[in-house]
Length: 218
Image (cartoon, rainbow, N blue to C red; front, side):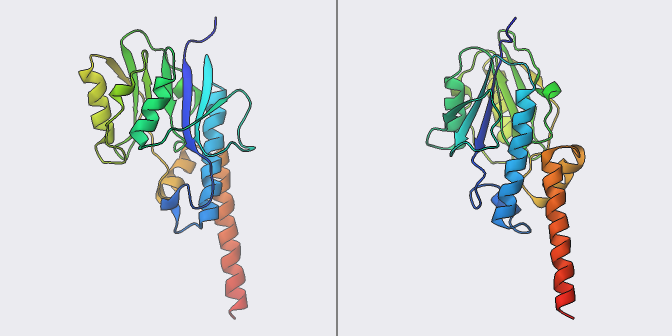
């Protein structure tokens, strides 16, 4: 039987200066973009390995070689993040689960959820936001107008679901990658992923550059 869930990933094309700007410094814009691409690759791999009726990448930008097969790509609409999330849900028929590209430690086990009528799932993030939002019957109005990138974003969003009469099941709390400290912690929690490998390469490159600088400064 075909799984009924649509999985949505909302993401930006990993271009220097447009993604992960809070990682600069200590990383350069190009290095931050490499980390963003690695995070996106890990996320898409997890989604690709999760049973789903449909997999959709809601993208700001153009797809690249990092996109695996099996995904429909649709452009993000204009407006704030709440409007873009609402539009992604509006395009879904039937149960849908949406995640971002900031949690490369996500696994197919975390994403394998069932949504019965009147249910929602909510994945809180450590910074007060949320990393996952799912609804059995997607209602864009429950997302539109939620203040994004605020300390209470997650609380406001979850309250919206409860106030609408939905039965909310909470997923485990995850840490978004926003800062260098976040990157280190997330890589440690998923040491075998592309993100952890890319972070390790960047640290190795920096150590080599520092050694060359020390030698040339003698």
